[in-house]
Length: 381
Image 1 (spheres, rainbow, N blue to C red):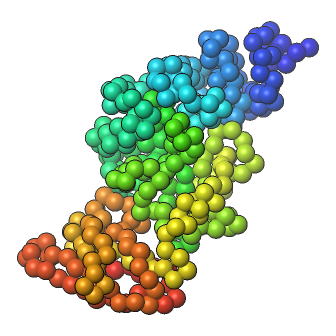
Image 2 (image 1 turned 180 degrees about the vertical axis):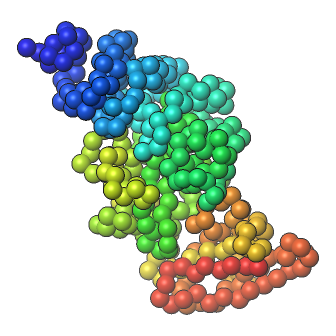
Image 3 (image 1 turned 135 degrees about the vertical axis):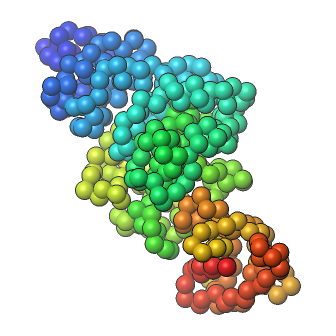
């Protein structure tokens, strides 16, 4: 007797994709009283969406099997395929990447919101004139804050907020912002996944961000909710990410996956959970940041505070009469781990110049970088 007849009363289309048979059997068993909803979703998926539905259910987390209804799953899959059939860049995405990094309705363990149709309509107007996928990525990145009206804040209710939880508050952590951006990309057919490190090797804390798979480069590249002006694979986090340790569970960098990988994404807000598959991508970041600094490099990390609140001020860094870099201190809404960072050398003297925002008076601070540490946090006041 075939798998399809055993499980689904003769739904013969299941025999087309035997690679999902064990996974679907597992999900149906875990579904318990919700089994009929999964069967309904499998039966009612249109022929061209059958493989996607089978993939989605085959790798569903156990708690989703018990809770998600057929209507939710059918809508998610239908709008994912609509994006794939609408946008030129989505048509070029290999099927395995479409299934794993566009089709899924979630990235981590966030609440399961039915965002797909809404986000398709919200962001399609921003990519309508994009001629390439890179243009579409930039359009979404540049529009998302205006569209969803969410800003970074440590005052958010919880770290792993779903898209609508963040939008209801107007606040989110780096994780919540990454989930939002990931959902927006997927909604318009751009492969996306959440990436993160449980613990930096260079300072306290963790961080999460986003990667997109680009059809032009045919590889994963990173971005953030607040994108770097230099484009993909540029950002404040690179210097720290390049010092990750792929042999350490806590100091590795992981990308999320829907399909099982044999590894899990460390959820720092709930380290007991191991149901989010992941890929260790540390080596790529070490190589990507390999040209930054060296063994004798030190990073000046500069911020400006009024009381305990960050404020943007223009900052210049000098060594003697040589101006090394000009930039701005981070905004109040920037990630707490983000600074105006300048790569310099260990054990040398530098000058930091800025203008007092109240008086307009020029100010200057001399600092000496440590001889045995790869960074120095400088707080201007």
